Image 1 (cartoon, helix red, strand yellow):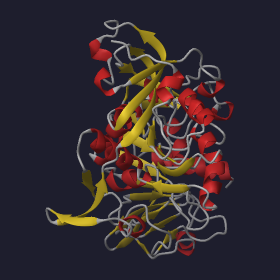
Image 2 (spheres, helix red, strand yellow):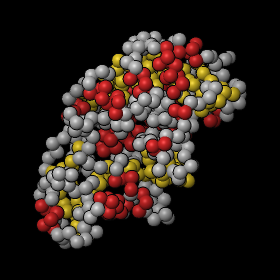
Image 3 (spheres, each protein chain N blue to C red):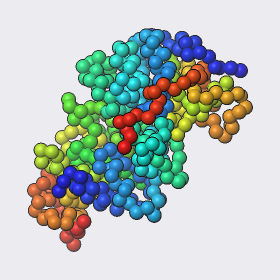
Length: 219
Length: 231
């Protein structure tokens, strides 16, 4: 699979986790591709840390508004029902439990649902931003990530070695080959991508996979 | 009642070593003209509180690059390689907070409180090991002190002469909380109206919080659209 197609595969599956009326936050990277896979009749509200609730897509060229960006600096549009708030209120939505579902990328995620995605000591330390609050307080946290890193090491591991963003905070992991759910007993393999064998998922995963009684589904 | 004054008069209130709170998240809400005035004045040893350091060679970044900033209290520098490099070489001290916790520290300072308790980062060693914690109502929490600035520099779309402020869209961000949390509050504004012309329902920051209003004669290109963020 090319990079584009497996990112799209992940984003398309992730879109199924959003339903009517939900308040949603997208992290950087693959999460920004999710919205386009939702049918237009599903009304949901995208929250950005900088105080926008109800972001639409990126602004078509020539229609940019200098006062309207997302948390990554991209010019965006609004959907009907949108609102603006200051940073304090924006994070009250997050910490107060009003984010129904958030999608974040990962450097490492463990079978117990620990997430590391903000710092590689000595190499990458730009600051925590809003990630820790989103990870810890979103009602449902979905990690969307490549199954393996560029050196083919598993990103889904027994224990994270990098400093954590949040502990036991991940509810679902979606990669290009599998959908997995961290549980207290371990990582449950819910779905396998079409054309991928269970053995391949096992080999490419850094922690033991539990199987549901009816066996994993397909996506 | 008239709080409108010149840029020079307003910035005369900023002294070396001050803690300066600066509104803005990216370009929207960043008071670029006030920051350029500070740069020109050369007031140094500043502690700057801002969400991020703007992008390379813009706004706050220029003050940091000129060596006027001793310390930054911030949340994320991901879009500014220059300041990250300076931080890594020890040329500027940087203190990071989770974004909403920084906002609440400022809000607490503005509300006359002394601190706050939070569980954010409590189960991640990197944060909790460096923080004061306390047991409260059966759980261990991080204690964060309130933040109060000597000066706050804000950007608003509109003001009246009393200092009532109205912000535009995502340019609100940290401006309203910072407006409450500094001894001297200076707002640069794009449009000035007479007292009574703003609908009270639409005022975001009541004039009581604002000391000086500086009317922008023109918007420099830094306020405009950034080419590299266009599709």
